[in-house]
View (cartoon, rainbow, N blue to C red):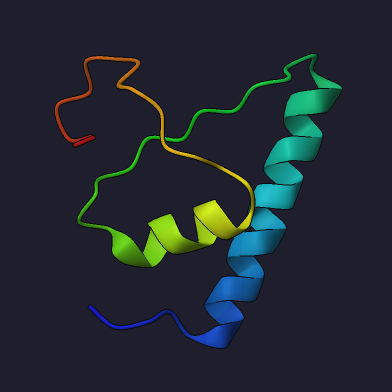
Length: 65
């Protein structure tokens, strides 16, 4: 899989910003996103937005940490 298109990156950043806004509005101060290591196109933007990898926190069979 290649790199995401520029407009996809912009939309992804907007989505994460809105997610943070809504989480804070509802009293949450921690966000945990599940993803699969194979989804490299998603992991890079998550890191650039400030998310970091943590130990597995659920039994989701599709999340590979």
